[in-house]
Structure formats: structure tokens, C-alpha cells
Image (cartoon, rainbow, N blue to C red; front, side):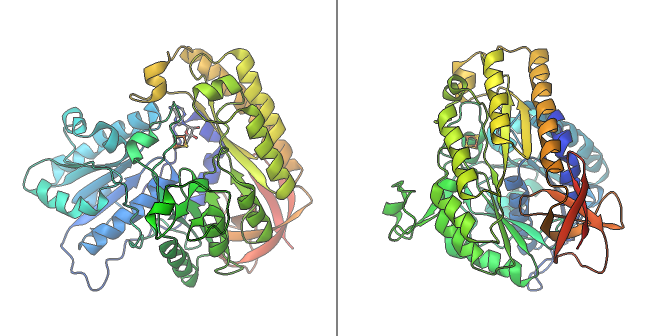
Length: 492
Ligand code: 5AD
Ligand code: SF4
């Protein structure tokens, strides 16, 4: 399976190496359960976009395997080619369209081969996709994956098949995802779906629908099962994990008393995090994404309490200027964000913080960009994902504001923030030289087969010469050198 993570962005050059190292695990064929008879057909799936999409592809693989499909890692070999798409920026969509052209050869050479588009772009374009891209036979939105086997049957009769219904309940809770491209050590667990925030620039609330939380019992079960199978790190995924809220009593879920940790009958994020951390002291727990408006001190105290909850918080800033934040409808201002950074530094002093930044949002001035950069200096991000604003049809910003910063100017601004981030991440890495960290070994370095790579609790990638250790083990590594993207060390 080919994997791509937003790497069409210039900004992502900074982290591509990291992603390659994270994603270099063996490509595993998907196992069809022994009890399920093969239907003689093979599927191929390729994923783009966020971690959530990669997690969704694993749910899709599980649904298809249970319906009798076998998998293939060569699309030329497939009867069913699936592409799980991202709609967050225009260039993510262009990339998918180009890729679809490549699939044309299979359609020409293999009679009856079907092409299906899944995910956010499917949801955004719906039936229009079929008109725009003749090669597409099936269009399925993020909440309709259970209907995929039926849609394939429908498409086999020569009709075009579409299901883009969004749901208020679907969490795929009891579907045990098939781990694709897995290193057998780290895995994602999706804990909720959708998003109820209405950030003005963002298409996600339209493509992934309303926010809903998955039953905590199925989350714990999945994490426990991964641990039993040798996995040593889970990342809990949601668009806004801080608003996770599950109760058997549905009347309690609507109320947002997120401050109360042990609120009667309700499991909130701090509680969920604690329950996952209690599975085993050597199971690392990560989570993403936190929202500055919802991140409670409770979550921070839980992080501080458990050694196996990794000291790393992804806290998107978007902009450091209060006027721009207001236009973005982020519902916090510069002071509030600063206060959250202060809380992290006070309660979890060894935490690393990463962020998302958008430059060139409608009417952003040079001075307002400076506010973003001074906030970067204040927060000292160890990692930043930096983007040029891309207007998305149907969003609040597209309706209300003019996309008035010239493309060249946006690029210049992006380069400025990238330069600043590069300097900062090098500084942060240099400050780690001489320190020793506990590292979970994830596999062999993509650069040098004599080196292992793994990450410390702060999510920094560390490479070090192999000795007798094995992937999945924890080792103490002393950092001896670094680049702006990687720490280099030796086991002690
Ligand atoms: N243009 C540019 N970046 C965007 N993001 C979301 N929507 C847009 C857009 N329209 C960025 C935000 C978000 C990350 C996942 O993608 O920074 O946090
Ligand atoms: Fe988009 Fe905002 Fe929801 Fe994140 S929190 S998915 S940026 S609307």
C-alpha cells in the first residue's frame, strides 16, 4: 500500500523524513478471517490526508476482508481499486485527480475492474464526482463504509454506486481494524468522528459530519487487544479529542460539563486517557488533536500522573493574532492560547508542543503574521505543520471573506514561518544533545540498515546504531548529535 501524508505541501518537507521512518513498516497482506470464504476478488487501497483517513482505511479493509475480498499491494492486480481521499486543501484534491488518471490503465487492461473513491473528497463532491471523473464507479463518504460490499455488487451490474449519507451515530465501534502497513508496534485508534467546531476555513465539519464519541469499552478492548498482540504504542485519534464524551445515558452527552473528571455516568477525555494508560505501564499512549478552547487542566494532570502517557501535545495555533482568530471562528484569542501554553509548561514541564499554522488567511496583515511568529517563539514548538490558506467551497470563510492575499505573497509568508520553525527545531534538538531518553524502537532506519529508529516520549525521532535490541523494546538512548529533524544517539 502506498501512503501519503499531506506531503504535497512545501512545509511538509520538514517532516517527510519523519513520516517515511514512521511509515516504513512491512506491507502486510490483509488477512481474510478463516471463517469467511473468498469471493475471488482482490482489492487495493491507497490513502491520503490525515491520520484519521489512514485509520479509516483499516476499517474499510476489515469490512472488505469480512465480505470475502483478498487484498493486493499492486493496483495493477486489483479488481477493486480504492482511494481514500482528503479535501482539506485544493492541492490535496489535485493530487487525487492525478492519481485517478494513473488508474486508467487498469480499467483498460482488466475488464470489470472497479474504481472507488472514499473519504472527504467523495463526501464533498458526491455524485458530481461521477460526472467529473468518468473513471470512477463508486463514491462512498466516511460514514458509509459498511455499505461498501453492497455498493461493489451494484457497480458490478454496470451502474454507478454512491452512498454519501452522514450519520449521527456511526463510530464503527465493533469493527476490528485490519492493521495496514503496520510495523506491529504502533497503531492508531479512532475514538470519535466528525467535528462540531465551525472553523471558518475548514471543510471537515461538512465532509465528516457531526461529532460523536465511540463507546469507551470498545476503545479499551481494541487497545488491550493490540497490547496482547505485541503493540507498544497507541495513538487516540479525533478531530478534537478534548470534547470526547461518552455515556450510556444519551441525555447526558449533550451537556458539556467537560471540566468534571468523574462526572457521574459520563466518560470524558481525561478519564478515557487514564483508562487506556492503566492497561499496561509499558503501553505508550498518545493522542491527537487537542483544541486550545477545550484542552482542560484535567487532561494535563492525567498526563503528568502516568509515565506511559507521552509528553507530547499537538495544539493547533492557526494564527497568533486575535483578530484573525476571530475571523477564523476559532473561539479563543491570543491570550487564551498563551494561557494554555503556560498551563502545559507548568503542569507537564517536560512536554513537547507541536502545532498547525495557516498563513495568508483572508485580510491577514504583515503585523498579524508577526503575531503568529512571536507566538511560535513563545511556545517553542518542536514540530509545526505550516500551510498556505486554501479557500474551500462551502466553508464560512468562502462565503463571508475575500481570499485576497496573492499566491506569491502567501508563499513568501509560508517561507518566513518555515525558516523560523527550522531555526527553532534545530535549537530544540541541540538542547537535547547530552541527554538520555527512553526510546521505543519502531524498526530499522530508512537511511541506514545498521541503525534502529524510534521515538522518545516527546515524539522526537531518534536513530542509533543497532546492538542486540529488537523492535518493540524500550531502550535508554543518549543523544550525541542532531539535525533539525532527527536526534542521533547511542544506546546506554
Ligand atoms: N487551508 C489551509 N490549511 C487548512 N487547514 C484546514 N483547512 C485549511 C485550509 N482551508 C489546516 C489547519 C488544520 C490542519 C489539519 O489543516 O491548520 O489544523
Ligand atoms: Fe476543522 Fe476546526 Fe474541526 Fe479542526 S477543529 S477539523 S480545523 S473545524
